[in-house]
Image (cartoon, rainbow, N blue to C red):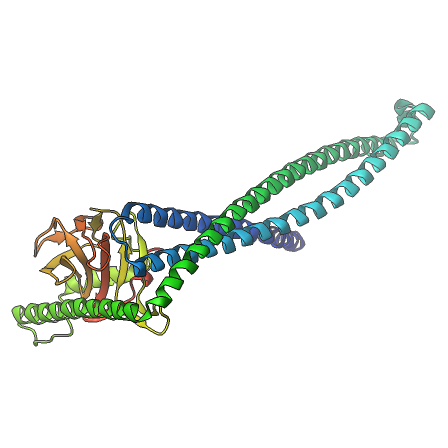
Length: 408
């Protein structure tokens, strides 16, 4: 019984070892395909936004940033597609090896089967089964001969079934190979088209950069003005949050602080729920592209100039609805100089800020549910394009939204 248990466990472990590489390849294939689809969607969104917003800004600075963003996404798409093609090549080679081995095994199996049938035929011609049984010296010998004949017949049947199974497996592998080759050719054809578009974008980029170099001083001034605008907006938002924290704590009779909310048990639970959703929160808009990430970045036009951003900028469609990323309470709606209005929603001691909105649909003190529409995106001062400036805070500390929002 113990040996049987050990044998069963061994067979299970062996099957697991054999299937693990296949599952890993399947997972890698699915992951790469999902990434490729996402990149194609992102490029389509960029193209759509460029087409819809091309008349809203003729700034050379913005055009350079647009083409740089598109080139970056296209290069990522080419890289992912090449990875998919390489994975398919490995799978094709593995299947070719399997097919070669299977064909050899099948040939050997058929040869052995033919010998067995031939031997069986000769045996029948020399002595019938009945005579074979009747010539037994005892009942026990006759029984054993009967069992032997049954086992032999079963073995023949088993060999025949094995030939059928291996023939079917060979057929399926051949079909899979055909599909893999088609998929690889489709990927390569798609990649050739993408590379051609990349060349065209790079030629356009070179022309724009040449224009930029002729006007470096002017562009440095534009970038400095943009950084000043960003810093002023950030300072306004920081001031509003500090004032709101102080006012909230004073109202509750807590020690006055401008840096940290005094939390009730309910607020602590809400904050914990918000924190547990890190990396899983929804985008504040359904359609959009991040045009400026969190943190300090060298300018794409003049690399010696750096721009600091404490949130993310999302370029989207005109009048795009803006939705709350999590349940909470609106604690501030404020006009921001150079950025329309900001709606601030508190989630315990976390705060989500949706800046550059118009057509506000909520009020201060209103309880908000996840996904509820709070307003529409307004146009950015610098580009005149519909742009959402989005922030996440823990009290007064800036957090990187890309770490909190799903696939940002």
